[in-house]
Image 1: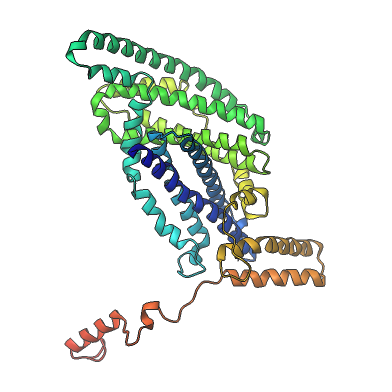
Image 2: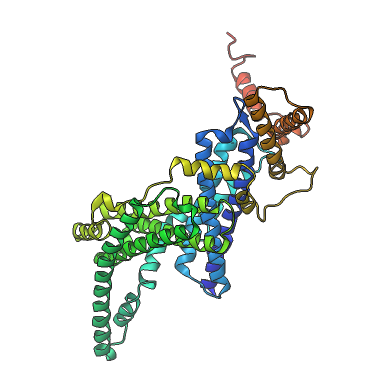
Length: 462
């Protein structure tokens, strides 16, 4: 029962909050970046904003995909301890990054508290999800690999159980131990050679792949599935090498944290591909999926590279060498994964800052208030098509060097009025606590007391 509750709390409830943040920020801030102008240009056209919005979109897609897959697992009456830990740590961290980027884009409107601020409460609330049910710092650096290395290894659990058998069954215990030990060694050798082969093949496929190959959904699935198989082989080899640390592994939290990063990226990668296969047909989903997969593969690669550079223990140098040969047999040449290029980043940003099917996808299950009711996210979503149309009209007028028609002028004026209303923040004449009768600001009281003690009316009085 306890395990089931943890699986639901860590694997479903907490990540769901991150998905809510991802959908709201992507829809609300994506629209805001098109509504808000600086130097007469929508800030969605600025490179820094495009980068932030593209990162938020791909992180949001990975979170949604991970939650969908985890929900299906739990709905199948399973309670995966390791995957629930991965989901809790990765999704809440992704949620925090998404909200932080939203704060960066919304700027002042995100820190002025009030009914128009739809980011402030999320910014303050996400650290709660990060610290409960096992703080992320503990989950990442201890729990995920500490549990997963023994529970998920195909032979280690039986070997450990043989050590706990009673003395009366010593002969049977020795047989089981030797059998499982040989299987572990064979498993490690299989992973070593499999990792080398897949590493070389994956490198060739990556080096020869076109930057626009992702537009073909079948090729996108085939390519990234092979990369995840390669990274899974690399991770399995690394996990086998961790046994060289013996019982001291539980104290090597830096190593376990890096391996947790790699495992989390691989899991979210598989979840993202599974999600794409189920939802393909949405215009633009290929671009966002490609952006997310490239980042997840780079994260897993970098985590294992750092782990190999810093492998601890007496046999650390040997394990490090074996790991580098197995995971990266040709050095830098077999570390082919890179972050998404600028053109892909701009494309993903465009998809979520203009009306598109991808925006509709992120907008699923986002509350839209009735017209006339004060709800900033709803107003931004409704304003986006109007502002985009007005910008297209204005661009056409400048390009053709002509005067606007009456209908065009009305549309531009309507968009300007909406923009002016939506970029405003809540303004208060007094802070709410100051409205109480007889209230005096503490700073003023303290100043009066100090002046009275010095027998002065002003600080600069002689």
